Length: 87
Image (cartoon, rainbow, N blue to C red; front, side, top):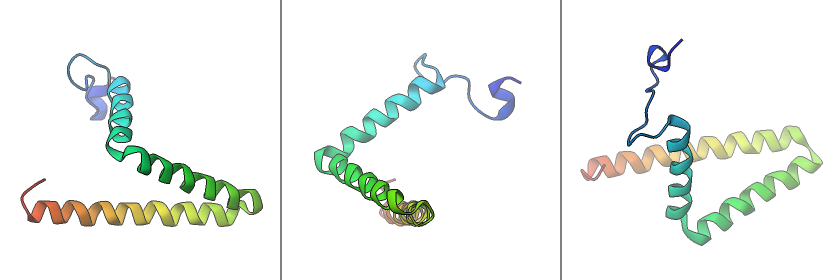
């Protein structure tokens, strides 16, 4: 099946493939976070790894809680920005 049949664009823009553009988005995200944000992500992952060393089930639960919290915060911020007409 072609990517266009799956609903996925075959080109992401400016002559790059989808995978290359996804990689550049990650780099842009890290630039936007800054040094403190990157240190925060490293500490977050280190904390989950430390808990996983003791109990994988509890670490998986904590990771799901953090992912859900992140989605809620993203949704709240997007809604707020839309109400201000900024996004």
